[in-house]
Image 1: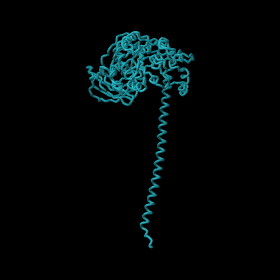
Image 2: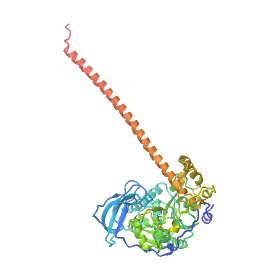
Image 3: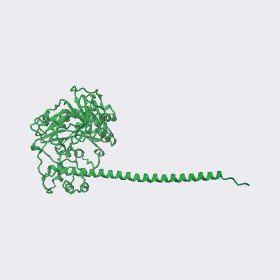
Image 4: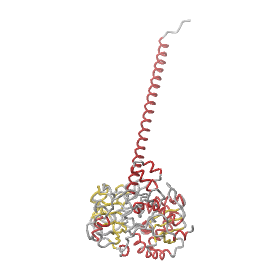
Length: 497
């Protein structure tokens, strides 16, 4: 099947829920004034949490380093405002558990004084390693939700000699339109960032995948990309989860990423449009990642739309800025299919948060689950070609290993199976539970293996020490005997001839 056929043929997998993107997507981008206080979590990315390099009471500028990366996979955190560090302690994590995690609390002075920027007029004159270094220093991570440090992916692309950069502008989640708004308003930044990434990884072409329900974004991106033959704007069918890396790769290139393999291993690297815009800011303008566009939407919101907001802003402040018809019945960070339910609005905006959804009572209603009728709808919808009903049947009976044998690990938790289920069975919750259980078992196995190795090493050490002691004792005994014999020879008179 050729590229044209792939782009215009609706995929057999996935679902097509009502997108609920308008009127939010069509409203002009608004800028949130800096709040009085912001909370910058140290863990806004995959990998090790950042290490604070500031102290309470210290004055900071906008863009100043607050916490340095730790380890090979980590990302630094920078100040989104000028002001003062007033605390370093726990805040509620943007996670369904509602547990705490460490954050740096800032008090804004509202002056918005930036650090001195290290600008670059021609990023394409820089070595790929320098682009990678600047991207890492700016704290750029995947802004589509994965939050993997972007510079680490650059290195992977360089090492595996990736030829194609795919820029993900799918934004298939209902309600969300932050990437759409970015492409409409700042298409030149996205294209420039994509070309910088292409240069950094050594790719020869860029494919920008945008769902065909975003005609304004497609037109703006085509205009921005027109001068660059290597940048191709590729409308793709509006089908959830088209924004998933593996599905977008298959649609645009026809290549299938094997299980337990990286996209780079098939010659492709994927970055989100917002990530590319952040690379443009970091490399060309010398500005770290301290702000982002976030969609505020849902039935409880009076003026839904997209807001350019500093990271660390509380969800409640974003909702107050857009106004509410009523108290939300449900808050979600991200999209309704794969986002995280929030316990309350006292939770900070983080790098990977593309949307804040405030659902009214109607939207928040979850029908009661019924028995599985084995209709097979979930199997037809699964974009990974799995058997959700068979996996769920085994998980219900705690047969987690059997579910794993059915490739549970390949599930991307997209929610297609639960969305099409006529019995409203929460299949994704089953799979998340099973993955957690299997992960806990694996951790326990590793701990047990480590304990066994330590115990075996202790036994060997004790045996070695006992053997060494015995050998030392034998040596001392032999030395004493030899010394005694020598002494006896000296004391005994010699024979007279």
